[in-house]
Amino acid sequence: MLHDIEIGKIQCVIVKDLSRLGRNYIDTGYYIQSYFPAYKVRFIALNENFDTEKEDSSNILLPVLNMINESYALDTSKKIREQTVRDMRAGKFIGDKAPYGYKNLLMIVTN
Image (tube, rainbow, N blue to C red; front, side, top):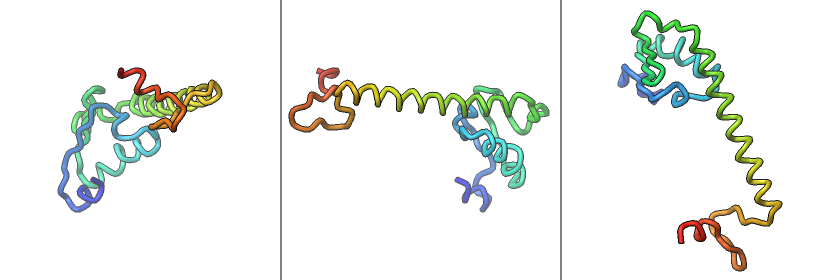
C-alpha cells in the first residue's frame, strides 16, 4: 500500500478504527501527521470520526487513542502467553494437531 501511495495510486485510506492502521502509537502518529500529508493522502478512521480533511484533525486525543491501542495489544499478547504457559503446565496439548496419545481440544469442542 505504501508503494501505491508513493506512486500516486492511492489518495485516501479508510480504516474501521485507528488500531487498524497500527498499534505502535509513534508509527501511527507518523503516518497520520507526516506521511499521509506529505503525499496528500486523506486518512479516515470511521469509529473515531477522524478525518484529516476536517478542521479538527489536530485532535489532541489522537495520541492518547493510539497509546491505548498499543497498550491493549500488549496486554492481550501477555494474557495469551500466560494462558499458553498454564495450559502447558497442566499437560494440555497446545498445538494444531495432537500427536498420538493426546486428545485434541479442538476436536472435543466441535464434536
